[in-house]
Amino acid sequence: MTSGASVVGRIGELVHPTRGADGPGEVRVSISGGTEIYLAHSAGPLPSGTKVLIVEWRGARAVDVVPWTDLPGTG
Image 1 (cartoon, rainbow, N blue to C red):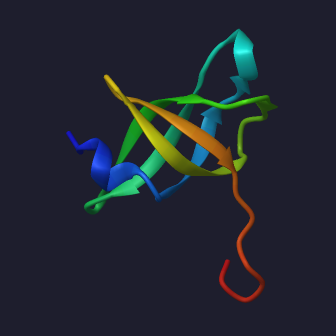
Image 2 (image 1 turned 45 degrees about the vertical axis):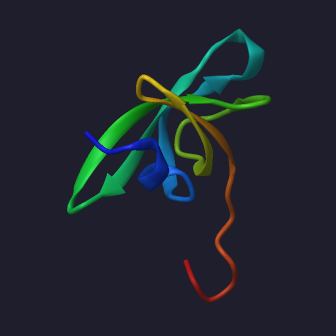
């Protein structure tokens, strides 16, 4: 299991949509040659497939995310 400090700042993809205040979704993150799934909380609803930036660790495999757009020429 990965610590919170190492997951904050990573880019992931939602595998289940978030519902904002109505509940979390799930985000898949590539870490150390594998992938891990975390509960993903966001300010507003985000659909499955959205690229997100992990901005905060909540503990117990839960994180806060915001939508992410790759910079031109980097994606």
